[in-house]
Length: 271
Image (cartoon, rainbow, N blue to C red; front, side):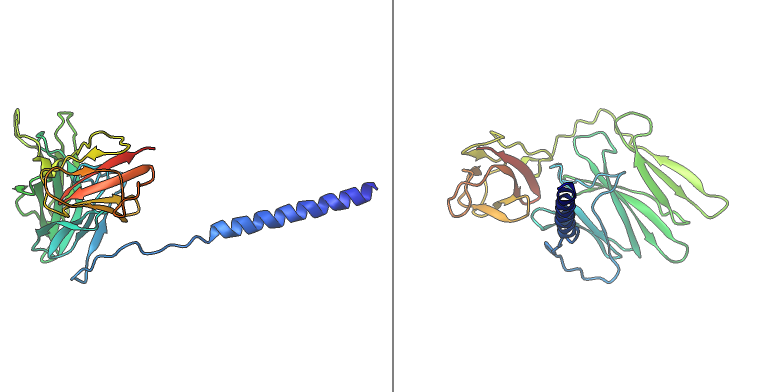
C-alpha cells in the first residue's frame, strides 16, 4: 500500500509541475502592440522620454513628454493626447537631448538643450527656453570640440547651473553658466498654461470643476490612462465634468487625464 501511495504522490507532483510549467510558459510570451505613432519628415531623428538623471515633464503634470530632435527641429509631443505641443526650429546637424530644470529661480522651469554642427569640428551651442511661455531666454556663444553640457544646482541656490566642457583636445575648458537674476518676481504661467492644474474637488465622485479658462466647444478632452478618449466637453464657459463618458455612462473609479491645448492635469474618480 505504501508503494501505491508513493506512486500516486509522484503522479500528483508531476501534474503540479506540468501545470506550473504551462502557467510560466503562458506568462513568458507577452504580446506587445503599437499604441500610437507620429510621422517624422526627416531621416535622422532621436527620441527622448526620460532617464535616471533628467526629468522630461514640461507641462508640470508629472507625466513626461516625448521629445524628438534632428537637424531641423526639436519637437515636443504630449504622451497622453499624442498632440505636437511645441516645435523649436534648429539649424544644425544634430540636436542633443533636452533637460528640464529651473535655471533662473522664477516661477517656471526651463528647457535646456544643446545643438551641434558636425563640420568643421563639431561646433555647437546650448539654448535655454522658458517651458511655459516657450520664449528663448538665452543662447550661448558657439563652442568648438563637441561641447558637452550638464545641468545641476551645484551651489545649492535653487537655480541650476549649466556646466559646459568644450575646446580642442589638450586645451578643453570647463565653463559654468548661472543666471544672474535676483529676487525674480515673475508670475507663474497663465491658467491656460498652468504647470500644476488643480481640479476641484479631487478626488471627485459626481462632478469636478477643471481649472481651464472659459473654453470653446470641444476644446477640453478627458482620457483614461491608456490614452482612450472618454469625454469631449461641449459648450462654452467653465469646464465642468460630470464623471461620465460621451455615452452618459458613469466612468469607473480610477485616474483620468484632461487636456486643453498645452495644459494637462489629472483627476481621481472614486466610487
